[in-house]
Length: 343
Image 1: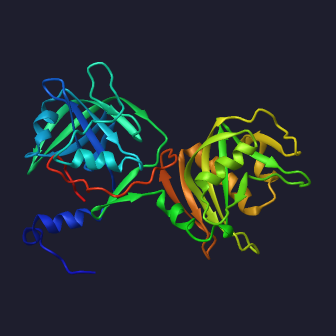
Image 2: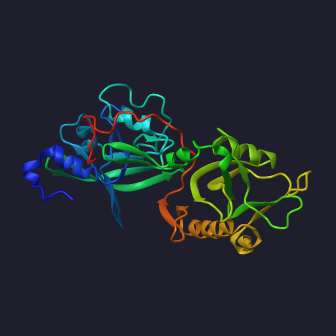
């Protein structure tokens, strides 16, 4: 641990490095200029203030080009970026280029432009502007919002944090040692199956071939059952006792349910709810525990990622309803002249 540092002596760069130790999300704040043209900037200085009344705040540098627009606009939007929107973050942090080019935008009558594909978009009415040092704090009342099931984009120590990359790195090793599975839900139900000649039911799984990844293997597997699904976050990583293969289970939502419950080869499909206690039907202890945790965490709307440890395993909680990520190269970090950046 380093010694105590005086803020008066270290200067802005030292403070920025300190603030960067706080992991944040990334937002794009949007508003309409006086002439009706859309404006926006990347910001990770955003927080909720109050639930009753519903208030949030964002900060913008006084010298930023967007400061005058934001502080004068009657309404503004906060778009919480997803894991697939690093390029959006970079574009709105840049001093050049057309920021809204190629983006799908929605807005309520008289409201700000809201970016489709964000984890959440919030329509706010400006309540108060507070001058604080070299920044303006803009407090807004939440008028409405929309939420989409995407993994969030993080920002830490001057770089982006992609929550999907851990699974990607695991799959770069020899795929023959990995089995991937999907906890696929349809409303309150989850898909399980029983293969011919087996007494127990199981979560749909497939062993990866060398060089293969879950993004291709799981859709092919489900396609054999006449099921289509969109996959979300990694849900658990574990290795059953006595089995050399690693299990990686992902969450997903069914977009096309199975047309029949029994396939020509004798495989049976079932959509089961928590009331069915489906974990008692599964043959693998890891799957049983994972399915029980899935129903519990879905009820709490707070999922996590489990991994094996010597002390019995740990779960890292993750807020929100994420879905498949798009891998992007890390572009310019937030911090253009329109950006408040505490990281």
